[in-house]
Amino acid sequence: MCTVLFALITWQTAVGGPLRTVDERIGLALSGKGPEPLTQFLSDLGGMPVALPVLALALGVALRRGQRARPLGAGVAMVGVPALVVPLKMWIDRPGPLTDATGYYPSGHTATAMVAYGGAALLLAPYAGRNRTLPVAALLTLATGVGLVLRGYHWPLDVLGSLALCGILLLLKEAAIRGFRSRPHERETRSGA
Image 1 (cartoon, rainbow, N blue to C red):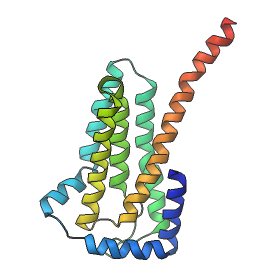
Image 2 (image 1 turned 30 degrees about the vertical axis):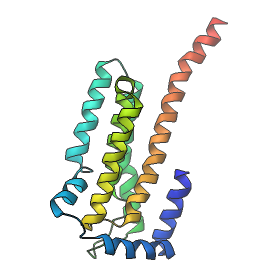
Image 3 (image 1 turned 180 degrees about the vertical axis):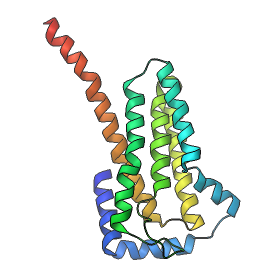
Image 4 (image 1 turned 45 degrees about the vertical axis):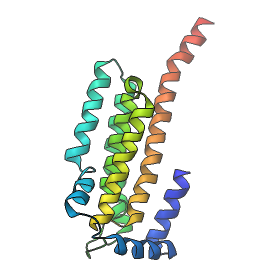
């Protein structure tokens, strides 16, 4: 689902399709709405100075409690954010809502928020429960996206594209960790037979 959504949003954004036209109309209507201090605070939640320390703290807790694969996976996913986002920004070369400057699709702040908070939530879930950690991560990520759109820093599709892209990234990370964990078990089963 994330892959199809990301492909559709990226295609429409790149070619200036009808979805992009609607996106820009909505984005301009929302830009500047809401109290500036609040919308700035929300958009700053996706900045590296805020999101990375949260992930680092969760990495520390997980490592201290003996986890190895999950912290490594979360760290690799975070490193993957600029590796994926920067080339896409250069390729799509989309102007921002209130500027002629380009490189706004996909939103790096939204990507950082989703991977940092989502990664932290998954790392802390064994201790605090997924029902507690994942909603907090989702709320922080969505708040970041809302703040970015209301401040006029990004179009709504910039945010949605990042959510879809990082959904793919987090799903791949979890699949890789599951695969990594199952291999030693398979070896033990074969050698024990």
